Length: 217
Ligand SMILES: *Cc1c(COP(=O)(O)O)cnc(C)c1O
Image (cartoon, rainbow, N blue to C red; front, side, top):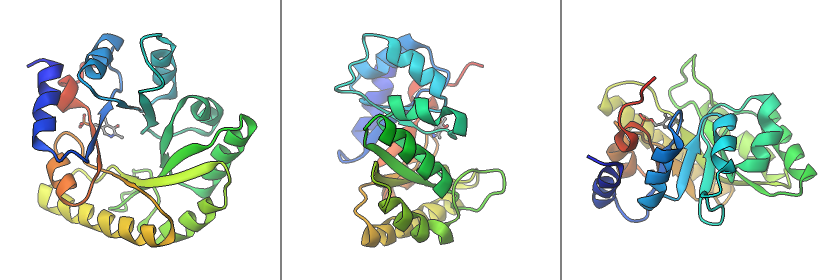
């Protein structure tokens, strides 16, 4: 199946309000262009450098394409990230939020951010624990150059039933956060889990393998 056919199949099976983000890590530009030609306007990158080189290409129409940082953002990459991304989905501490805010101020940009939640409290995962969310939301509200617009999670690698319960928890956090601040997006669900994620409230799904095929290392 071609990338175009894969995307058409996915879109046929999901509600229209759900946005498909193509997770582009280690994909060559020609494949990314196939994705764009198939109508995807939301691109996710795990590495600042990959996004930088993609954006150098004149074929990327920045008026239409929105680029999200979905990988862990290192402190020494914050300045560059703020310059090139429309949204940083992986805020996982107040310190990081403050650094991003400072860098955004310097270039007079208002940048959209999501908070990353480590919903299953896994040791090896990034993201804040659910009990620390409200506090971080209230503090981010005071940072003038950040627009807090969503929550994101990677979800644990487990059976689909357990995963669905974590998605439910994410949805509860999403609704609770909406009482504190107007946020729009719940970014969760990947190639093997996007249907249950949507059923539990995701409105951005991040798809890699199911769009591009298995990654060749
Ligand atoms: C790679 C990646 C995805 C997509 O994963 P697939 O299993 O290939 O669909 C989604 N989100 C993040 C943060 C990723 O790194």
